[in-house]
Length: 595
Ligand code: AMP
Image (tube, rainbow, N blue to C red; front, side, top):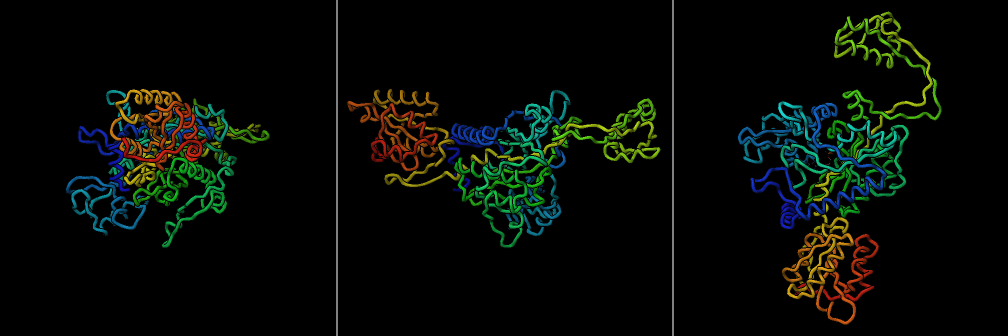
């Protein structure tokens, strides 16, 4: 299925469409329609179930606008860039690395240095995709992807729309660790919008400027905490490691999670653990596992914070697209926020036995430092404290020198009041390491739709349908009166719908057009079951009955109305299959043309 076909189906059936169409549209912004919003919500619930609830993690909701200080500390102000080349003729901006990938065999041009990208543009005579003018010789610039805003009226404080949900978790770490009773490991999740001012948004909801992320930040003790690998050790992964990507005849490596960690293909056991969990979850939500791979980041491709990183990639219309990333962020973010905020981003780790240690301390005499260094005295004192911890021998001579903001300050050692104390300590402060599985919800919605798309024929008529997993389908069941001009049928349909809704199912009704067309409408939005109320069901002298049709096989059974709600609930939780129902009830001939 091409991107275009999917976008058309998505628009026609209310999954998603470009936003603000009445004002000409806004590139990179999409609205999820009634079907899409329901599908996305179900997908988020399935993620929450797997990565929050079943893992014993907790979920938070942080603001989407954050002050500049956060991104100064996190490195996003300096390093969250993409390569931009502007066409001198028409003024259109393009992502330079994408132009190269489109025109050559190079797969990850993002990992190349700017000068090499400029050279490749020249070498391959790349032209502007909008107007066809030559791009050779145009400078390639680093463009920061964050949307900037001001907080409050007037000049205000500078703020940014968060480019990832993660920072909303990191900045609150000192509080979140209290809720976790200072016990590592613990995990915090967040599902919410992230914003990136993409240079050239493309492929529908695949590359947009506002999208939803589902992220887990797992805080672990780097020396003590291991993942429960046993849970996923036998999960099979299709890996595409760096050396295979760089080899001439590189290939995928099919290996279990346990073996991949054992032989070092996946360096971090935590990352391996989450690859296993993710693979199972992708199967649960209906991703085609033959079109899923885990690709390791090439060294130049890693984000500024990532130590090792693997992406889950789905094959979509012939291209491999990243749908989730799994990174080891080390203690990078917590350390940076500690340095910039002055707050402690550590957890107290109790020793098995208290330890007696020698600890160097200083107590600088401020009545001397103040007059000598004025406004810098406080920082000089802090630098002396830190030096005592790092290098006590620096206090052996008569004078000691520290550096503050590139300038040297020398003080008499007695003024520092240096001492070495013997203390008994119950534990130490450790800065956790972070493992981050990060999922792009919109891209997974897209994948699930594309991988569920089917075409076949029922009773000689061709149809298209979405074989969505019932857990994800926007609508659980559709209820139709066979004809709309029979009060007995419409009123029983209304009763059946009300009863199914009371059971917690999402129900739609439809009485317009032939029954065949109504089935096809539901097939195309992936509704797993349709109930039809017909005369045969109300005219016998026994119990009222209805027919129940299963989407993928179009098979139908006739069953009593009073058994319907329980059977549908059992079908949606997996307690029953449709074959069980075919064995238990009378089968009905499929005939989509009757009205
Ligand atoms: P990243 O932080 O770049 O690893 O992104 C995490 C996830 O967010 C990716 O795996 C994608 O699924 C998703 N994502 C990143 N950028 C975009 C975008 N511009 N549009 C839609 N989804 C995105």
